[in-house]
Image (cartoon, rainbow, N blue to C red):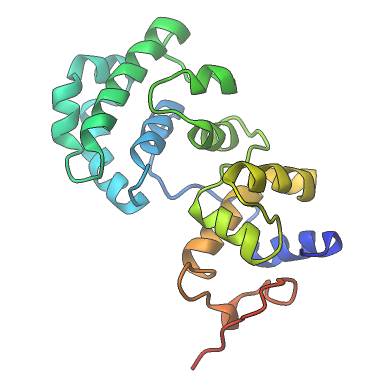
Length: 213
């Protein structure tokens, strides 16, 4: 396990000086972020941004999305995985936001997770990105980094999440979420981590560090 005393230095190193990182999903409002994250399940941010460019132009609000309807939503997102189920969820969550929350995205975990297509990970992204809460959405990148680096080992996403919340300095919890995602996406990759260019390698406990050929 990474030494607790090294965690701050590791996170500062991989942050690249970016004190306020932002998700790579394109959005203009909390509602659009919520929809984009729901669509991002088993899909890349690039593919989601491609479909939301049209979707949000036609339906930027819950009211407009409900008026657009499930079938029309589906036509606009057909290029991403699970598009039929996602279209149904987006239509229904938009309806429920209007019915239960006056069209506003709630800043409460239970209320978010009560919406169709919104699980713990999606709720955590919204709570972190929109409401500035120290929530940690453990995707495949963060799960891998938590275990590979020794930062927060765990056998399940929830175990890694709980460990991160305990071990990361409180003042770093919000930005650390995206620092870890971006580091996992571009440096500490799944198949071949690029350890030779990792600024946090000195603090990482991974025993099979790669050397550039």
